[in-house]
Image (cartoon, rainbow over all chains, first blue to last red; front, top):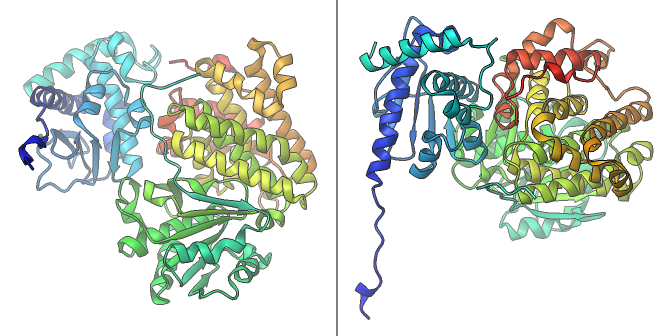
Length: 181
Length: 416
């Protein structure tokens, strides 16, 4: 019997897709930190979380990841891409790279991704929902309306987020996210 | 027919249903390789003599019941789970027979997590995905036709200190066997049959129009609604109708299969929060919030809501109602059903928040509690699966209407 005629299949690395997701996570992670200083809703969400709150969002099992926590003053802080060695009470993993691509190319909103069982939430669900609310708002700031409307269930009305507040916030968040403060 | 780009459906619970289905317990436990089950139940079930029916069914077999834990309260919490798990270990049981309503079945699932995976506190397994391997054999025998917990991947267990309901989700929470015996629901009084049946209808309706709907959950949801709608009022009026009881039990299990795979939306979101904040029984919340959930999501799900009229009201009403009027007619039909159940139970079936009272006749949901409920709802997972966004202001708006029992002013719904 020629065993070589029965090939093994080794998993591909999907390097390009992983790089894309890693870049998106980096931008979103820094943008959450920036939004926590610029937007009162995001700030309040973080102030309501526990003192040592940290969450990781990424792709199961090998990443990439982003880690965001709450500092002692109750502000959001981007803690890098590596969850190793950190105490993380809330881990939100997308089950595979392809599912993550659907989410990060905005082909699927966060809600639809949850409905399609693409996420695993390990930790307090109340905190996870707070994170989802923050992510939705950060996407509204970062993305043009046409794209953000695909990513969130309901794009904020003027009464919830005025265009002036949104555009000023967008410039400030991009600036802070790029400069990392 | 609606077909999503992607869906998942899992309903791998062996179901045994019939007028004397309990007789199968010994052979079923034997096929699972266990001999010393622990029965988990509540005082009401014990007092109604239903545990005697179960022990009668195992008489003459090689089974020995290791322990009967009968202290599950109506709204079970995590401390009860931890205590029952200790008893299971002390009595060296090897399986679980859960006999009761949703609280008992969910408690039993929690106990099964602890005794199978180890640990002393069920809260360590909170959320989705924390339970990662097969649990001990479990038979679920519902004594209400409502929760569908006998076939769901979810257990909802309260933390009374924090006033929240905590979900535990995993495919491994599916019991091995669901056993429906008409005798087990026969003694359920009309004022409990009504809200538990409406709970099951709510599962099916929300499964049919919420975000994770799929062809398999649609099929089970529609059949569930047909069975429950055709029988609920008759059974409330004639509690001894065994065939009607069995039809309701079958409807509830089908609704359970549907929502376990499609999840639920606003009605459960507000219902869980009201239950957590004010201690209102789950089925009561479901009955009164269902019309509001339909009204709130109408602009996004008019077609699906209109389609619900067929199993609810039957082919004649459906055919006689013009297409455009069907969604409204569905809501009208559910409000009418609630009214009929209210009348048939001598006013004990609540139609709106203001009229819910406890056993001493005290109002359970004072108006000043509405902000608490709306805040709690923001931390409940069911909001994710609702077609329309629900933030604090949205929840308050719906709660204020539901408090007075006024139809929703749909101009106030912010449309995404």
